[in-house]
Length: 379
Image 1 (tube, rainbow, N blue to C red):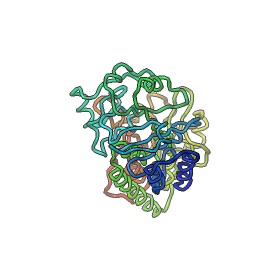
Image 2: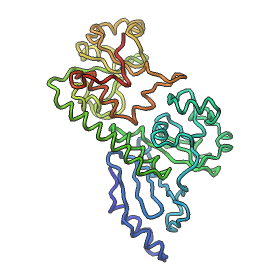
Image 3: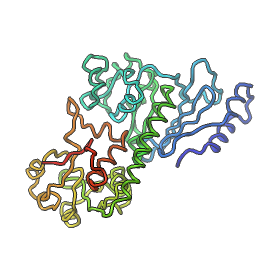
């Protein structure tokens, strides 16, 4: 559910009932709040004179808590009733992030030089950030579930941006007890392409670059919607299959998932588009073959980067029409210098490019001069 400014204003005002209000408190809380989040369901930003209230609502599925952060501009007093929440002085000067999906937001905002640490540096594909890694300006922090707390404490960043998959985050909890500022980011839990991309505004708020973040997102939004509108000109809907076998099950996107949205908006007939829920379906090979044997195109065949890799892994993949006609497209071949897959890092931030890729694949006549950015046709 998206943020509603009037309800939030009522909530803030109610906090002050029964308490003596100073003149400054009264002025601050009576200012009109402003929330410019349109698609993301996981956070809201309410802006006042001199400070903002950043709420992270659903950082992981079934989160049992809403996280509230007060972003305080210099020399501005915030209302006493908000001081029980984490207060962060902005613009922040240094940061640790824990997901590669956070990197593009820093780069687009021009603040990548503030990044001082990251877990498993090899996953990062960004060329600018890799140069800083190679020069020793960004420290290795281990793994997300086992962060190097001593290094983090020594770095003393202005903020640590974490993510969780459930309500159990002991490493981040311990860092917070050490006096560090921990903020949860739930971009990965958004279902829609524009919802994920809108989290650049989360980072914009931390750096006092809200207007720049809005401008960047508006460009992405307009480009995405223009491509979606172009797809309406298509006269057919090719049948699309996706995913691959992992162990003894075939994993592919559910009908309400992020990946499925792209195929829907590109006017492709994704064969599992009517399944409910986000995330992945786990099916047997036989079930997938029965439904997708004659699919026209295979998009996203797991980690495979060539047709030979696919057939060598499982000779039965060759039964699919899309394999026989060599209409298989993968994003896994485009990697950073140390092996990080570019798609995993940049695609959530640039859904406009993903949608153009999918449209080029399924309706190439609509984008005759466009060259695929993330995907490539396997040989």
